[in-house]
Length: 476
Image 1 (cartoon, one colour):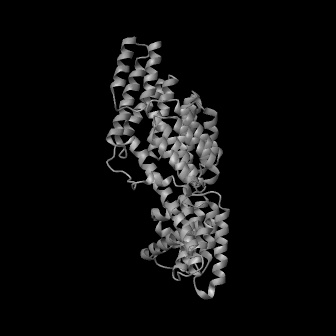
Image 2 (image 1 turned 45 degrees about the vertical axis):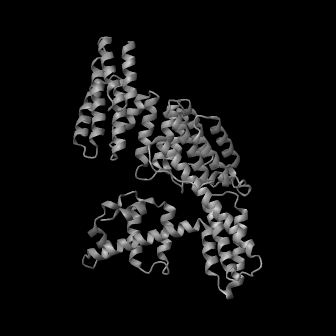
Image 3 (image 1 turned 135 degrees about the vertical axis):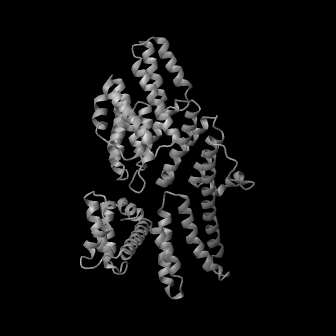
């Protein structure tokens, strides 16, 4: 029955947000349709039971809402749409509640009537106090300060003889420049990072004299500009690794003056530098990358809006396993999986724990976690089967290995979500694994032939592991 819009919105709400949304719907000023509240209560009950609201049929919903009326599909769709719109407005209201500056700036503009001058003075006094107390800065905070000064300047510009006219003009201009320069640097850094790994004919042009303009005295005390300049120098001169350390030093020095969002972004920039070095074969940068990850957790910068993205979660674990920090990785999984989106939370936990145990050679735990789990998500399903196959091979469980290889081949053949190239990579893995399983007691020449074939094949998943297994057989 329910569209992805409503489902995704309500599934994204925490229990606290669901409670607050119900209060929002109870307000006749905000919601003049009582039926939307009744529909929400029906869906809310299912959500709290962790049931899927997608399985609720239209007719079942109608019977609960209107037991004495004939079914009207158009009415139910309109009600569904109205609840979506109310949920979106609620998210806007919640977002504004976290950003009092935005409210005060809107209020400043709405009070520009002569009869409301006292109220306007009080609001602008409060705004100035808020900016003075704001130690952490971002591009958006400079834009907000420009908006405040710009409103004051616009009023003064109507009467040029106003006392302090220039005093109102200069701050507006300065904060506009701070916003523009930090945002321009951010875009330029993004382009630098992209062009470092991919070829592109497009670029981010800079006005003539841009870099010398940045060196003006008035911008020297703008922390975000100082840090971003270091990032640009670092990525523009990748061969000079001392510049990277210089950037990290400046980031530490200015960290207290950056908002969490921008501090997090700067650490991600540092990680991107490490990734570039790793791609160049500098494997010692794995440890540097990992230490940056630990720093992010120590500074409580991983969570955004109270949640954690699946990509960040997976990346943290991958690097932790790569440097052999197994205890830290296990603790990270257990501490942070509750912050993942509800729909993938349990899948992510079991899969990543199984991956960890596989690296630790705790094969019994791997089988315990994965043998009776069927993942609906393709990425997790393929990854889990791959880990199980490797585990059965390590344990020399030939019957279980052969059975899983057979069922996996059928799964690959029938799966319509997998691309042809992905099917080829997994099919090649199964073929090589089957050969390795059958030649454990064969001559070294045959092992070397299989190794040669693996090396020459450009379309095989888990190639590094396959080569490790051939090396083990060669030693035997």
